[in-house]
Length: 100
Image (cartoon, rainbow, N blue to C red):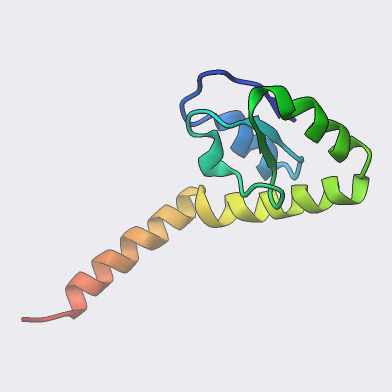
C-alpha cells in the first residue's frame, strides 16, 4: 500500500493496511513515521524516493510478506485498544498496590 501524503495526521490507512498484513510505503509526514519501523514493518520515504522503495518491495515478494507480517504484529502490540487497556490497568493496579 502506498500512502503518498504530503500532509497527514495519524494516517489511519497505514495502520489498517499493516493490520491486514500488507507491506506499506508511507511518506515521512505527520503521524505516518510513528507507525512505521523503517525497513522492518514498512518503509517510509522522502517524496522523491517512494518509487524506488516500491519497486524493491514489488521485486521481492519474500520481503513484502515479511514486512506485512511484522507490520501486523507491530499494530497488534502498539495501536489496538487492548494494548491501551492493558497499559491503563497496569497504571491503575500499580497505584492501588503501592500504599503510603
